Image 1 (spheres, rainbow, N blue to C red):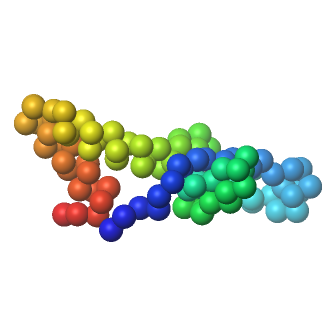
Image 2 (image 1 turned 30 degrees about the vertical axis):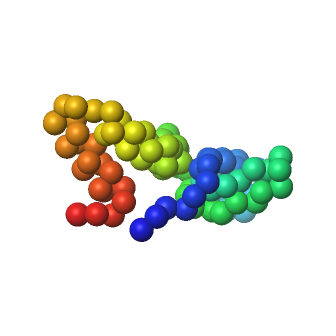
Length: 102
């Protein structure tokens, strides 16, 4: 199983007062995680995730998710350059979790 390729970026939209007045239960911000989005070069990309942002924890979760491909690559690189068995076990477990392995 492979994840969606491309740079993952987080875009946060802030709703205007008119939209919020129409639905007071609506989140004031909404986060979109894009893969392969490059507006300058006309690449629309793919939405990997989208979530309402009600508080700082929601935003932090989205930022962590957007960083996932780079974190996975860093774990794989660190595993290849590591000789400590405990650190290697931690890295292998993180990689397996990210790749959906037991």
